[in-house]
Image (cartoon, rainbow, N blue to C red; front, side, top):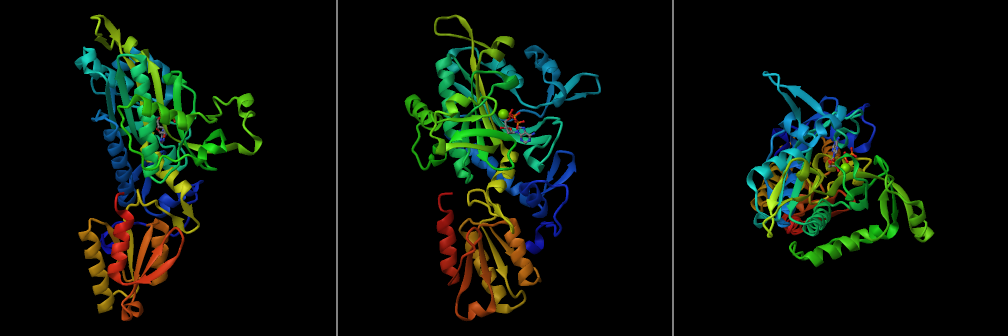
Amino acid sequence: MRLSRYFLPVLKETPSEAQVASHRLMLRAGMIKQSSAGIYSWLPLGFKVLRKLENIVHEEQVRAGHVPMLMPTLQSADLWRESGRYDDYGQEMLRIKDRHDRDMLYGPTNEELITDIFRSHVGSYKDLPLTLYHIQWKFRDEVRPRFGVMRGREFFMKDGYNFDLTKEDALHAYNRHLVSYLRTYERMGLQAIPMRADGGPIGGDYTHEFLVLADTGESEVFYDSAVTDLTFGDRDIDYDNVAQCQSILEEFTSKYARTDETHDEAKFNEIPEERRCVARGIEVGQIFYFGTKYSEAMNAVVQGPDGKQTPVHMGSHGIGVSRLIGAIIEASHDDKGIIWPEGVTPFHCGIVNLKQGDEEADAACDALYKSLTALGLEPLYDDRNERAGGKFATMDLIGLPWRITVGPRGLKNGVIELTSRRTGESEELPPEEAVKRIAEIYAGL
Ligand SMILES: Nc1ncnc2c1ncn2[C@@H]1O[C@H](COP(=O)(O)OP(=O)(O)OP(=O)(O)O)[C@@H](O)[C@H]1O
Ligand SMILES: [Mg+2]
């Protein structure tokens, strides 16, 4: 992409309505524009990151054996009356009437809809286990939408639902989700710690929330600092392997890590004092096992091997895809702007032409652009007729992890400059070397 042809409406001023860094930076970098409270348009740069995160989530879900689909945003109230949640959900639910005066709602979540699909088509234990998921917009009429996309009213969420014959099978589905989530967040360059949480209105004894530590997080968390040493890394996972998934769950959840709702002071105090941490976190996902709560209420039954009809065991599992962008920026920025982890960056690198219109500089930039593109990489080439300082400031603000700077002086010696956004360190090298280096950095991502 050439910047002269792109739509990147960066703001010079710091928007006064934004209280946290990620919200400020997303507005300043021209990623989003508020359309009404808690509802945003995703401008091209923001949309690109959103798509990247969505892809990572899809890849990791499919890898875990889960099946993608898409359900509508608008739902009929009837199903929610069956489960009893139409009245329970309260003011967070956006209720709508259609022209025939039928009660509709903009889905805040999809347990009812998916259970209805399941009961309409599945009747035998032979079709289990089954996990269906989608990534779709949700609406919750939050009392206080704030922090930009982190607490929106309309937000993008992956929600998955497992259907199993027995509690044991459903707990394997729970573990499988936990493992796949660990991998998902790590690919995004994030540490998200699974913490024991409270079932809340969805109910259930087994639930973990995934939290990204950040001072601006809305949840208070208590944990043993040893949990922050755990990394998932490049493990070979067989998602059908019950023992393997169980042992990873144990590895990542046996140390103390809880949100304030389940915090237990006595247990916490058993940890050596120097390892006791009280901090704040951003909830970027949650997994639940809730047994037969919905299957009983909505008669989602299958015929078991013994010929008897039995309600299926279920769980639901969510990832806050749009919130994650805020969380990533909270975890990775400095006073100049965003610093994207390589796994989610909207463009792989920036190209800054220090002297637009100079024949040699223009030709070198074009050649770099072509070589990078030919390797499947996406550079953002700042080909505008602007001062170098302005170009650098824009690149720093939008946070591409690597910048190639091209100028007539370097070209005389056959070199360009490659700069890391994270460390600020620069290195002079021939253009082909820089292309090779960038290709290596992104190989396998
Ligand atoms: N208003 C929101 N804006 C953006 N993302 C959200 C919002 N509400 C929930 N999410 C994301 O969707 C995920 C799954 O939804 P879940 O039902 O667990 O949310 P929740 O527990 O009600 O969230 P919270 O406690 O933050 O209100 C959450 O972990 C979070 O990342
Ligand atoms: Mg939650």
